Amino acid sequence: MKFGIIKERKNPPDKRVVFSPDELVRLKQLHPELSVKVESSDIRVFSDEQYENRGIEVTNDVSDCDFLLGIKEIPVEDLIPNKSYFFFSHTIKKQPHNRKLLQAILEKNIDLYDYETIVDARNHRLIGFGKYAGIVGSYNSIRAFGIKFELFKLPKAETLSGKEALIANLKRLVLPPLKFVVTGTGNVGSGVKEVLDAIKVKEVSIENYLTKKYAQSVYTQIHALDYNHRIDGKVLDLNDFSQNSQEYTSSFEPFTKVSDIYITAHFHANGAPNILTREMLQSSDCKIKVVADISCDIDGSITCSLRTSTIAEPFYGYWPNENKEVDVFHPAAIVVMAVDNLPCELPKDSSEGFGQMFMEHVIPAFFDGDKDGILQRAKITENGKLTSRFSYLQDYVDGK
Image (tube, rainbow, N blue to C red; front, side, top):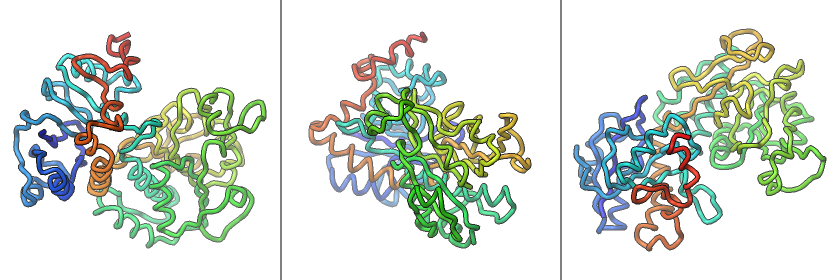
C-alpha cells in the first residue's frame, strides 16, 4: 500500500497538509509495510527538506501511489485516473461550483473519500479543522473590536508562529468588561473556549450573563435549545429540535441586548430557524458590536453575514437599518468577520492536529479490514459511480 501526500494547487494557496514530518515518521514506525511519498511543494508549511531530513521520500511524481491525500479541491486537470483520493471536495451539499469536479472524479474512475464524510456509526464527524477555526475566529473577534474602537492593534493571526503566540498576544491586552456569547459546543466551540479560557475571560451561566453586570470580561456558551424554542411552547429535547426544526423559532434576542461580541460556532441545519435576525439587529437596545461568524452562514442564520470575507480583508461593516455593507468605521456599523478558511491562518498547528486525528480515527481502518465501516461510510464514489450512501447526488452530477 502506497500513500502519497499531494501538493496543494488551489488558489489562494493553502499551506496546510494532512501529515507533518513527525507524524509520517510515526506512521511508518507503526506500519513499516506502508510506503509513503510526499509531493514536492514550495508553499507547504513544512518544507521539502523537513520531510527529507526525517527520511521521507520527496518527489515530483506520486502517480504510483494508491491513496493520494490532500486538503483542498484538486483542479480537474490534475486528477490522476483510477486512484483513491482524500480531500475536502465540497460537493456533498451539491455546491454548484464543484459539480464539474465530481463529474470528473466519476469519469476518471476515482474513489473519493471526503474528510467531511469520515464519521462514526452515529454519523458524528471524526476529523476536521473545526477547533482551529474556533481558535482563530475568537482571536479575530477581539482583533476586530480593537480596530473598530481604536483601542489596540493585534497582528493578523497568519503572521504569528502558532496558537501559543496568538494567545500570548491576547494576554498582553487589557480588555474592557466585554460580554461574549458563543453559539455551539462542538469542535469549533471547543477552540473558541480554549482561547477565552486561556486569556482569563470568565465563563458564567446563562442566567447570570443575561442579568448581571461584571467588572471583567465574561462569556457564556450556549447550545441549540438555549437560543431556539418551539412555537407551540412545548419544552422537548435536542432530538426533537433536530427532527422538527421547522417547529422552532429563534429565542436569541435576549443575548443581543447584553452582548458586545457574538461568536458563532454552531452547525446550522437546513430548515432550522435563523438565529440572528435583522429585526434583532435593528432594535434600539441591541448591544452587539462584533459578529465573528465562524459558521459562515451567508444569506442564512446570521443576517449580517452578507458575504464571505478573506484572510487578507477579514472584516466589513454591516448597517442594520439599510441591511447593507458599509465601512467598518461607519458609526452605525456592526463589524462582521465571515472568513471561511480560518484554519489556514494556523497552518502548522492545524496540520499537526489534523494528522493526529487521521492517525487515530482513519489509519486503523486500512489495517483491520475496516471493521468499523469508517472507510465504507466515507467513500462517495466507486467504480465510476456514486456509492449508495451518496446516491442523492445523482441529480447534482447530472446537472439537474
